[in-house]
Figure 1 (cartoon, rainbow, N blue to C red):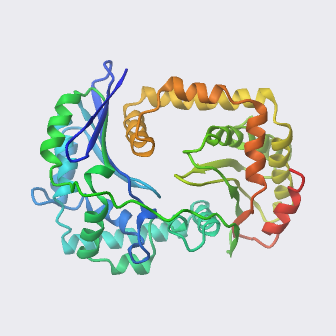
Figure 2 (figure 1 turned 180 degrees about the horizontal axis):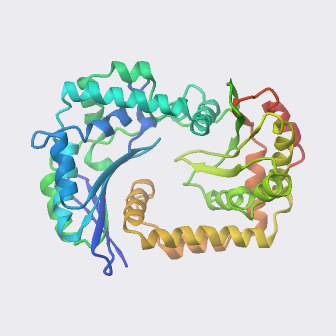
Figure 3 (figure 1 turned 135 degrees about the horizontal axis):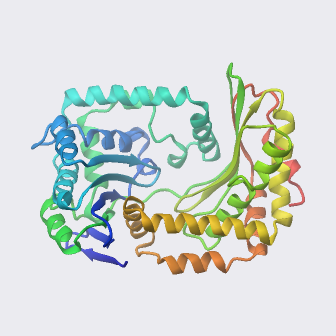
Length: 421
């Protein structure tokens, strides 16, 4: 398998990988703009635009879009993240032209009908309400907002009820024109595809994308830490404790990923074995590391009863601290093996591979080879991985908690537990 890349005169890039043994194809349009690129008065527009893309074009109604793709046995979806927005399709090989036509239609010919807009704003308000009713989702929004206060990177992707309710067609069109430009966009495809045919179709169907300079610069993120607690009548406390991580563009990114995996990424990890298996203090506990273009967040999440919070937190924090001091070769080998399996699994899935190559092209301006990634993982030693974890744990802690939160540690108490790391 090899990736083919073509850049059209407009700046639009096409990246494809043919997987000869497949009879289906995944393709998508990936835009290098997400919630982080919104101005204060635009908060929630990236996500609203994603929703409205499926609500009718000059050639198709919302029902036409759904029926055409499903009549072919395919499916459409989309997702908005902090730094990117993506629109996907998965179809049989013969229906790739149809999928590409629909994707081009919804991204260049959407009408943003006022009736559909009001209806979809109502749907998003329900989605925001669902997050507020789901503490294991909401706690991560609180963590990010507390780690990056008063910054676009810290705002919830869905927006707020007040701002979403006030958006109109003009705001959506202005945001679309500013950010959905050819130079910020990659068409990715993997599976049973023909690169030349996709390039020809893309040149014809995405001609309306602006070729003006990209407006995707954002202010540098400033991790600060702090705490947010929401006292609610819940059976369990939902606690997320974070630290400053690292950008996916930095050399120590893989070291940080391996540290997070070894410390709390699976059933053999320290957090799982000590907190759940040895002490029975939580059903759910895991470590995580999110990488952004210029920063990151590392930490752990746990749910436990109000009675057990005071015991769980020192145990979990000590697990992380000790991992930064004495993580061993066997633990690192397991974490590296898990990363390699994830990488290889992506190579075997057309949907995962489509997304992987498109995002790499947006982020790194090139495609990372499997051997390059594996080599970068393999050359890291235990000392480097410990050092990456220690750097994160020395940063200002961020504490987010929902439920019975009286016994949740303050950031100062978390930091004092980690002195000497």
